[in-house]
Each structure stands twice: as C-alpha cells, then as structure tokens.
Length: 335
Ligand code: KG4
Ligand code: ZN
Image 1 (cartoon, rainbow, N blue to C red):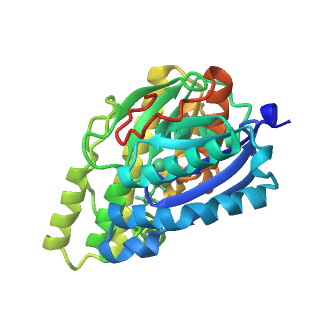
Image 2: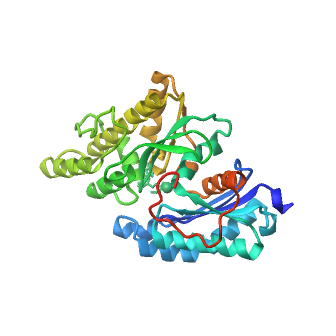
Image 3: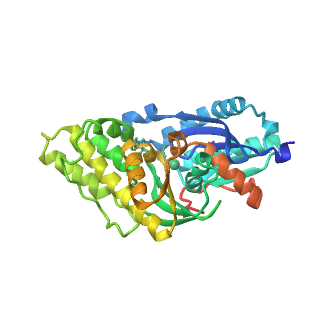
C-alpha cells in the first residue's frame, strides 16, 4: 500500500520557518505545520543564520511528528519523503535535509530533493489544482523576487528577477527605518491602511517593459526622505513606499503575462500576503483580461505543503533522488 499511497511528507527549513506537511497526490493537504521563528530574530531586525539553524535543530523533530499525527498518516503509510534542498541558508537547509534522509533511510522510503523556487511556483496548484499551464507566477519573498512562466510541473522558466534587494527585504528594511519592527511586511501593510499613498512620490525603479526589479534605490529614497522630512507621518511614508513596490510588482506581472502570452497569473512568496498587492493584482488582472490566482496566505509564505506536492510530481516524473545528494544554497529556479 505504501508503494503508491500518494502520501508525501514534505520538510522545509530553508530560511526561518520550520515546516512539515503531508500532502496526498500532490493536491490534498492532510496537514501543513509551520513553526515560525520571528520572535527569535526580531531583536536583530532580520534573520540571523546561526539562530535559524539552531532553531531548526530544536523544532524539526516535533514539527514532523505533528505533521504526521495531524495528517493521520503513519511513517509506513507514506510513499516518499520530500525536502527542500535550496536555495536558502546553508545551515538551515542541512537540518531539513539530514532529517529527511534519516526518515527515508529508517523507513525505507524514497527520498526526493525539491527546489524551493520551483515549489513556490507550483504552490498555485494547491490552490487551483485544475489551473492549466502556461501561466506566470510572481514570487516575492524576503529572499527572492522573480517572475516565471510555468509550462508544466518542473518546467518553470525565469522571465526576470531582482538586481539587488528582494521585495520582502525592502519591506523589512524600510519598516526598520520607520521604527515599525520585524517582520516589516505585515507591519507596513497594517500601518499603510491609515496612510495616504500619494503623500510622497517614491521612485518606480526599472522601466515597465523590463521584467527585472531593483529595490535598493527605493529603500535609500525612503531613508533620505525621512532625513529631510521627518514631519511627514510614518503612516503616509509607509503607504507611499508600499504603493511604489506594489505599482512595480503589478506592472511587471502584467507585462510578463503579455510577453509570455498567457491568460493567467498567480502570486507566491511572503509578500503575496500583502493586502494592497492582492487588491491591485486583481484590479490589474481584470483590466488586462487575465485570470488572477491568489493562493491562501499559508501557501504563499514558506511552507512544506508546496515541497510535498512538488516532490510528489518529481517522484512520479523522474523517480527518487540518491541519498548522497547534498544541499544547494544558491540553486537557481529549475536547478
Ligand atoms: O516567503 P517568506 O515567508 O520567506 C522567505 O523570505 O522565503 O517571506 C517573508 C517575507 C518577509 O520579508 C516579510 O516582511 C514579507 O515576506 N511579508 C510581507 C507581508 N507578509 C510577509 N510583505 C508585505 N506585506 C505583507 N503583508
Ligand atoms: Zn520562500
């Protein structure tokens, strides 16, 4: 029964979330457990790799146990164990990969190594299992900002990416600058609802016809504005900054859909939780005749359900990976 049960345990430890999930046939989520570490990193205003690695060591066992119990699938009922092999923090990836290999070896299960960016792109199928490729996905998180055309499982093609900071990183850095704490994205999202997005006109870097991003200049523009105009309310600055990021992300998402000739787009990554981005993406999609898929927030931020689902499709397409394969902290999309 185990051989083709379709139940895959996914493990994700690439950054600061320790996550495990059981997903059946790549679409039915039985459990999706995420243990965040935000409060451990908050005093430093960003993720501290050594703290993240140690926290994963502490949390991975209990989180996997919880995912199996909640999923109602014992270890021997699984078809495979899938894990994120990169990109991400080396010390964090090693913990998940070691745990996944140990479980696979002990239970005699196939082991599947999954690319984190591919998994973000394919998370859309957990929300909309019938969404037909090709479609374009914007993955915007604390570590990545990229546009990809998804032609099928394991077939994501990079269309553009950031030259410098990721969008989430810009949110975190600007939140810190404005004294809003960490993680910055949710804080700015909240405060911006009370602000006027037209109070300040921040730059929209990189022309709309290019599918790449740059956010470091925007962060500097906010810092300079703060220095020169300390009297402007924080809520206005937050709203204006958020508007600049959202304008850029939405314009390029639509441009990418046009360039790729697709009829559907989707969001992924932690920044996809941003309420203004979700609204503006829907409006722009409407205007451009595009279907816009907004996966549930838990499927956008780092999670193990996307690893399990992507791992299931990889297993069926090309079989398991060898247990002596390593991590790849800088794996590109599709790599
Ligand atoms: O995908 P994720 O959970 O982790 C990785 O970075 O891989 O994304 C976290 C990022 C952080 O930078 C956080 O500030 C941002 O996503 N974020 C948001 C929101 N919620 C999380 N950014 C803007 N608005 C939000 N509501
Ligand atoms: Zn991520």
